Length: 245
Length: 245
Image (cartoon, rainbow over all chains, first blue to last red):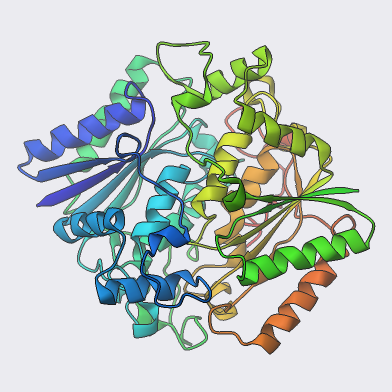
């Protein structure tokens, strides 16, 4: 199978780098083809601006989804975004490796979501192409992240909030594109932890890589279980991660 | 009072721009002093790199919080971040105006969180300076956002997830710095809505600006209600937004 790793950390000696290298070794060891997107090394531009649309379909006012859609139809998608689309088309699974910053994706990776998960190729809500019908349907995605906080802070009554609530917006954004989303791998307490603790985390992560294509994925509703208002149809029992809490 | 508006949209004719202008007019009309941070116009750099630390306290390996803390102590914080710190020190309240992209902050604003909410001045976890003891304690913060989706999609059983769950990571990141956080203002369905609907939204938002310093804030636990594991102490009844659901 083919795996794209999207990696976001500025320090080559970071624990995130070690996790990324562990994933590469584990996946190649299983015979998979691996490509690594090192966003910092690429100098990836995370900021969406009018410059993303050198050919404007609607020059009066920048409404981003309609310009994305028009650019995709006309084949004028900005080259750096089109290159990412080609990687997504190639991949059977996408692994995101990043540090949790301010309870979310680092900006360089958030901007990869903003710019690459564009209307037209990856999703197309006006045409009903999202969630289980998204452009990435049939592909898998997984978050692997480091957190400075202790695991208890991410427990149901933890001070950071339950980890499944914290990650819901990111997981649902992946689902929006059509991905089947695996449970995340979270390495906690990485600022204070010692080498022994990190070795255990790397071994755990290596184990998770063995299940990238076979582990059960997180539950999400399909688009046809929602009504026109955007809410669940009567009688559908909620099974999204956050709604089962 | 003094209000800092942090505004993130690339299009001057956007509805986000109209909301920002509405806030400026309403707040100045009440006699407040207002400063607007237009992140796109400023060309704000959202990406954290080693270049943020021209004087390295620990040159062997970039561990961001310890470099932030050392830079703050030595007075070597990068000039663009120090300028934002001065604005935060000036402000009694901070209003964030942005479009919800991929269920989160646009990257340029996420990077403002990543880089400006730095260890030392704004928070200092090793010294117990976060949540109610954070550097921004006594100041108010509020999110004002636009969403392409319909309100029903953000209801408890909505396909995007309940809006309070979706915004929890951002609200808790603000609380981490010490802010009292107001309930958000959300303008839904902004891609499809017509001018009449938008006029109602602008009027609602103008009303919310009247309560910026008086409206009740969201409930959060204080730091001393958590034990050393990061979980709530026994007997404390959960009152965070997400845990009351």
